[in-house]
Image (cartoon, rainbow, N blue to C red):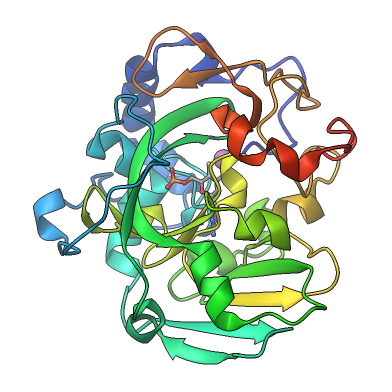
Length: 325
Ligand SMILES: Nc1nc2c(c(=O)[nH]1)N[C@H]1C(S)=C(S)[C@@H](COP(=O)(O)O)O[C@H]1N2
Ligand SMILES: [Mo]
């Protein structure tokens, strides 16, 4: 996510250099002593846990909702991340999350306007749900995108089992709060990370949450999901900007009013509650008309609802999308 201190005239380095050069430069910068002095933790190497080191998930059903576009590599998906709990650099998550974020024990709490509330061990939470593969496009609000083969469960199945009451109009999600695990949650002073009202939260309207595309991912490339991608369970809402896809979820809360969400609270004029991918509505500081697919040189056009228009456009019929951005 981009922070407001950038001047309007500044261009993202990722917009002017090919990704590979940009990443090599970042690697160089981040291993230098100077960069280490400004980071949250002792320097470490940005590297993904090798895929072989992760637990296989077992039987995963294919889904008609998957795209057949070429998938980004495991390396790209697990080393170019946003997970501000570990710092704001793209390589901070892969550098720090694998050692710091324990996948187990993990519990998920269902709370608020629902019949079946309570706290459950993740393994119990997953019981009886069908594990599916969903190959989805992910479009970050910053202007980059990837194609990611997630594994996980349909959010609608989880919600049906929770049996929300008629007052439940929205669902709110919370990332784990644990400053021992997530250094940014312990940040103090005037730093940007200290200005975030932790834990990270996000929300959906009930009909958005019930849409068959809304997904809770516990896996990637057929293995358990790596820490830096939001282990052990994270939301994936492919028609919205990536920041809606909240990581490392511990609570799912049903409520009557529109939930407060981290980025919307911080910069409401820049990050709306809906955050639907929309090439026609620019971010106040940059165009959203195009994106760079990680691994590609030329930019490509951004598609309405990130290419999921057929599945989700009806949710917003009659809404002014420039107003409800
Ligand atoms: N808890 C939490 N969830 C988060 C974020 C974060 O900083 N903290 N970043 C978001 C943003 S901006 C994006 S683009 C996606 C990136 O997911 P990925 O790293 O798995 O590609 O995670 C989203 N979920
Ligand atoms: Mo993002």
